[in-house]
Image (cartoon, rainbow, N blue to C red):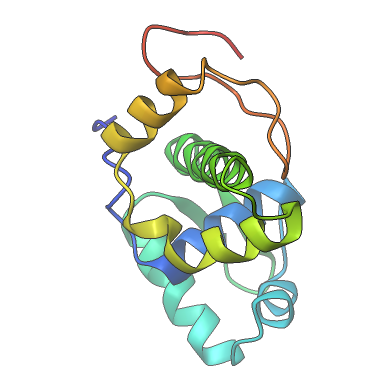
Length: 143
């Protein structure tokens, strides 16, 4: 697998991978369209792009699921969100405010920056939006 930089995918594609991780297993494309509030043709195109890039397996008329590579990326994206949300609460934002703010910019923050932020916060294991897994952060290699 190529090394994750955190900047490989557009914000919308990041949303797709995070949603698929949350759902687990095979997910119908209509469920994706409904959850992400996009037209079915848009979700089909995005899923096709993600499939061609190796992030998802798509079985037409059955559903979509993450590949192993897609799962690793999705886990990084969730961790990135959780670390950034926790960081913003340290500056006075509520949990809800920090989660909403991070959703606006998280896709533009590199893995290198996330690793350094995580290190400076002492490698927290719980954020305001969920658990933080240290799968690649700094020198930690634990889940």
